Amino acid sequence: MVQSSLATKSQSFDLVKTEIEQTIRHAETSLERFQENRESGEDLQNCVDFLNQLRGIFILVELRGGTLLCQEAVAMANDVPVGANDDKNILLTTLSGALFILRRYVEYYHQQRADHPELLLPIINDLREARKEKPYPESCFFDIDTKLRPDACALLILAPLEVNENEYEVHARRMRLMFQVGLLGVLRERNDVVNKKLIARAARGFARLCNGEAMGQMWCLLAIAADTLLDRSMVFGKARKRMLMRIEKYTREIVYVGKVATAKDAPDSIFKDLVYILYRSGSANPEVVEILQAYRLGPAEFPESMLETHRKRLYGPGADVLKSLSDALQDELNQLKDKLDIIERGIEPDTSELLIIAEALERLANTLLMLDLNKLGNLARNEAVKLRKWQHENRLPTDSELYELADAVLSIENAAMQIVSRGITSETDALALARTNVSEQSLYLREALIVVADEARAALTLAKRAITAFIESDYDKLHLANLPATLHSIWGGFIMLDDIAAGNVLERVAVSIQQRLLDQKEPPSMSVLEALADALTSLEYYIESIGTRDERNLDLLKLAESSLSDVGL
Image (cartoon, rainbow, N blue to C red; front, side, top):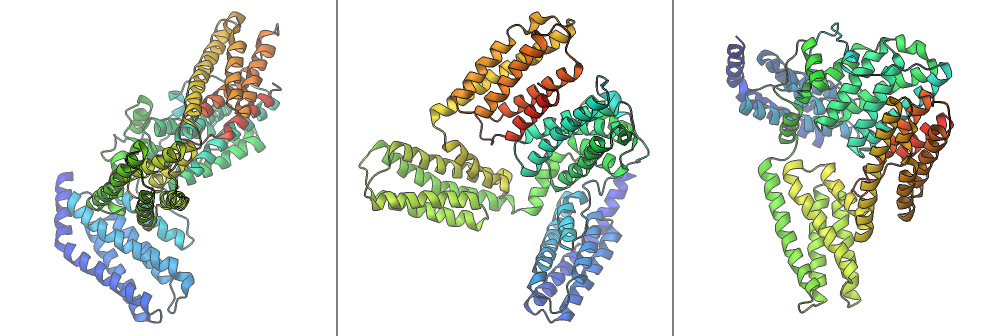
């Protein structure tokens, strides 16, 4: 029956495909005429009429995304007055882009014979945001019975958290700070892996605080979703960032209202968004499968990895165009590298070659800036300025100057190769920033950072295992005997590398273990052990960025310090 329905739907679409394409062209032409003559109310009305006609056709052939897109486009067009001033340009530009994407989607559906309305959600939300309307969540086209609520907390192994009222507030504040650090990293698009780990850990902490109350189900489901985002390397789009910002409101309530807030149930919309993440993930993890089965869902036939691939095809230039562009950039860069190689080898060096390389870099910079790859374009332009300066001074670059120039060229080459797979995106452009951060360090410093990071990672893993063994052995201090000295040796490495902040936090952890676990006769309180665990975890996340191209997140050190201060360590 399903195959028959799909076949009928495809046949219906084929009958009206030509009419759809013609109507889109008529709508685009009418909009272009209005943009040229803002007093032509007839052209604007014609555009609205064509959009309404398209909406009716999409309803008949059951293209959900096309129907909603046309509905939002009509609302957008109606917001544009006759004689519109320049302040309405954003509306007209967004409307024009929507018509272009709609035409691409019609081609896409004709080729794929599959309707994936979620692909159109970004442009639909662009239309709504341009009109100052609330954007739709990413689960807009996802239907589940929200009355079904599987016990997500039963799928997580969470130790009960028995704390008094004062300890409850301290723990809640620490978990909120951890969640906020992760959320801030997501919003800044910095160190994606650490952000997901922070959110997952904070969610588990809040679930333990809820201790079986209604709000705990949302936190348990968030913890599973964050683990899945990490496991499947899923990205945080605008919709997911908005969802996390909504969830942050509940962290505030738990801190300032107290335990009473945990009895409050989270809205169905948040549960729906979290289940949608699990559905799109393509994960086969037992907890994910069990939750989906509870909602009578199977694994998605169109997981997010495939969704992103199709979205790039729909929104960006075609693959052929990107391949041709990448090849052209790499040809130009190969010639540059040959000239740099001649200078580096000292084979008949001539300062006139510097001017040729500078001109080539300027051409590359202009191309990159036209593609809206501004960081890479500015990188190429800055190196061209240096080359012209060396040529004017009638000197060849020093070894360090030459290595920096070669590093810049390699960064641009790396971006050119990734254009084919990533498209022309901010991720591609960010390769220039990553290179700038790393190029400021000498090769020896970079190697030292990697060594220290590896040693610190091993020491923190040892510390967590030792504390776990200490607890499980009924507080046998032999498990902790060598721990302060081990952590102190890592402190020395950070001080030598001038990372004073990380060194100070490590020293506080080592002193806390000595004073509160080893020197005291009485077993430590659970709040002290929790604080140490949070501090060690924050340090571990901080160290993950050392020796890599990721910018260090100092908020993680503040989180570690806050965890220690909360219990007077």
